[in-house]
Image (tube, rainbow, N blue to C red):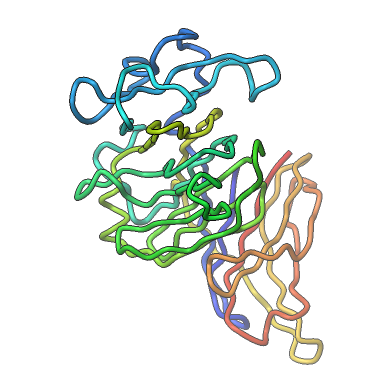
Length: 297
């Protein structure tokens, strides 16, 4: 996915950073052996004593897509397990980039304390998502937890529900999306972001608990490739902000605006003709905004 990130207050000229998403890590578990633990393949390992629980790789017709990591089963006799993978960021995140971690998660009624997200150099548990089913009579909930101890939550997705999650992190914010809709967010800073050094998955299998099932893990970053000027012209009468960007023929472009870098609102969609495209925000000059153009075929 290609993005032109336009950052400015309305009514002035700005610079556009062309950003190319680079895939750092992928895991669909299809290279793993069904009925075996997930460790030792594609960089996965467990942290703790030799008997720490290990996620089993499973393949059940109709459940997720082919092989998946099954947190409902433990491969070794233990109450829980901490799984880690450097996932291409062993040296830490680059604060000038934006990182996106996506995965598919099926949660069951007795899921409890399952966590998935990023590990951190100062603590195994970095910024991560925690799931709590009805096991603890908590009516089920989901929490975004950060290194500062802050939390932001959302409702339980439903027993047996299969959802696509995405955690987006940059030096200002971290946001979590469920099936394309933002459900949690929190502040972030460059120093904390830089300390994230891998993927972290905690499973809890004690007393009948499980940690759901996970598949289709992808970690990518957005690497600035070049900078080019973009002209913004503000209409003083009709309150319209206009700007231009270069397109590729055959690609669709969605123009989005945000006042906080967390909540993005679609403004318009254009079909690229292979030249300069013009977009506008009818209510743009009322306040400072950040704009981005998302390219997709």
